[in-house]
Length: 223
Image 1: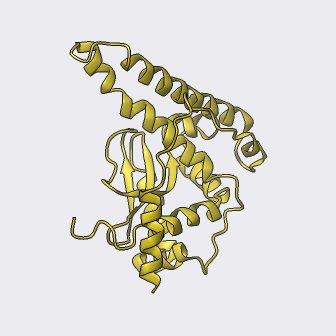
Image 2: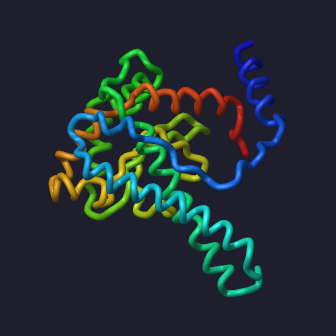
């Protein structure tokens, strides 16, 4: 009976009316993040300004593509930039969206239980996630859900548009590009990561997991 309910729920979303495009992408308001403890105002100013640039560039790029000859070299060059600008916009939104909390996860939540079941303990998962984030270089540390078999994987994303898991759902996103921490923490990336974890909004993060597992029921397997 439960499978039937989830099937009908998923089918409802499949056959829903197509969304109406609202024009240009809009910058989201993250002013509440200035209340976080441990993150300085200057660092957040820099990071949010950078995010605004990705929103503007994604809009400008998509508009410019529509105005050039599809057979031209310029068209191909612009197309290759879409993933970088668009992913830069969305990854930053996912990053800022999973901040602003008290850093405490509900030990009864489905996400917590899944992390314990797959990694042995929450601390072991966190150790692996932090180790992923401290890899030399710039990029992102992302906890991905493979919705096909429910596997949770910590992944290093070297560039905005390179290294993502096909059909994977990003659950937790940590920016480890230099702009995310060096203006305040210098080379002490671990100090930044500690402050990051202290300000995580685990309710938002857990809801990503729950939503993804519900909508993945009976879909994708065998395809």
